[in-house]
Amino acid sequence: MQVHALDLNDFCEEKYTLIGIHTTLEDYKLAFLLNSHLKTSFHRATYNLDFNNTAEDVSFSIYDYTNKEYDFEWYLIANSCTQEVKLNSRGLLQSTETKTYLINEKKKVDFFIKIVGEADSAYITKTIDRINTINQVVTSYQVDTNTLKSKDFLIF
Image 1 (cartoon, rainbow, N blue to C red):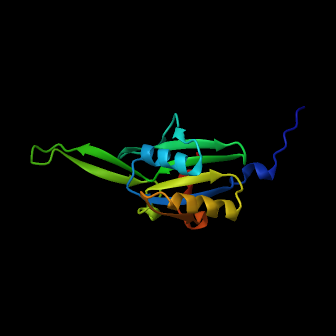
Image 2: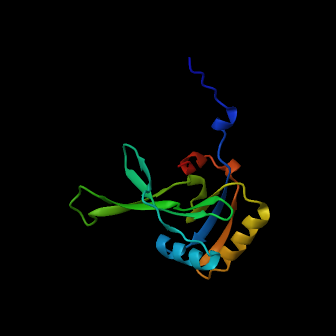
Image 3: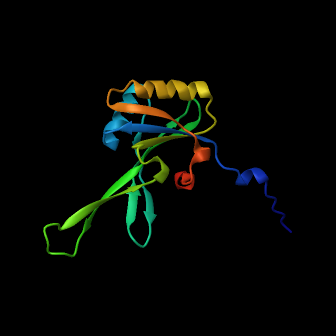
């Protein structure tokens, strides 16, 4: 008879750091600038972060990068998704745009960088300082994930 044992550590949450970025840049341009300033290699992931519900289907773009030196996985995630909804009326407006947020409590954040792994605070501070040197970035900062109600959306 085969015996299966489960370790309690198998059910623990993965350790990650979340950085919020405020910018007006498109996702591909931000990824390019991060690659030049941080010496990363973000590239468009083969998947999006998709959510399907009865009202609408939303899709958030993802760029990923693996740091082999520190064994970190980085993800650049858009916080908003804009969709055009066609109206059935024959009036002046034929369609309208709706904006959906990945993390509703952080509507002013345009992008998140999720760094999976146990990074020390000096590494995170240095990364944030380098992001803030990009002219097109208004600001970036570390987000306390314990205060987020929607942090389950960041599990992928």
